[in-house]
Image 1 (spheres, rainbow, N blue to C red):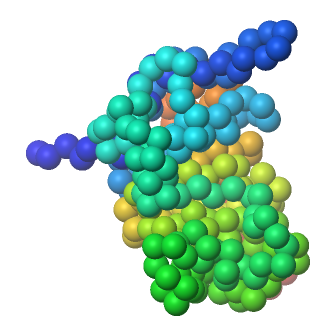
Image 2 (image 1 turned 90 degrees about the horizontal axis):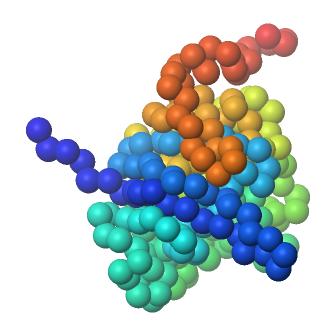
Image 3 (image 1 turned 90 degrees about the vertical axis):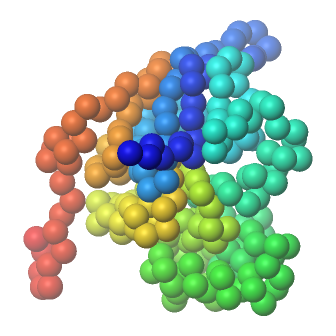
Length: 248
């Protein structure tokens, strides 16, 4: 039997924030692995190190200790330009910060990620396609500031997926969503994994966003602890059922 090669691996990774008066360990001895089609969820409170974990995975920061591999290659052995090229081509990042200018329509914001590689026409076509795929086609001409939180979450996913990455890093985009809105985002993440064979690493501050992940972890005091029975978590945190009329 052929064993699938991991898209992303953390091996005994540690990262400490160096302050003026004190050092704060953010991540301690972190090990995890994602292959194509995996959805791995990491739940933690604010300032628990979730964003640092994603920054390391994206090559935006380097570990103090341990090894991070992408496609089996140690990132520390690659040049800065090679890591940047990897990030621009094979790694998608979804977060809720939006475009730098509020005047940019959603379609152009999503297309901007591939404008250089695809050209204007190709980038806009790809952006329209991915917006339709995540269920946000109606938002193409809207401005970020006029969107609801649920629309912003879906468009953040589109911005991360437009590159057609091998790895999608999702930074707590469900934080301000209700359960039904979370369900739409989670569905899109799982479709990205199953249909597009993307490895998905998602951080969340709501346990419900971890439901259905192939592996789920808590991150506390810098350490990952696996939730051994994600199905049981799904029984505890249930999404309300949509109904055709009235409340459930």
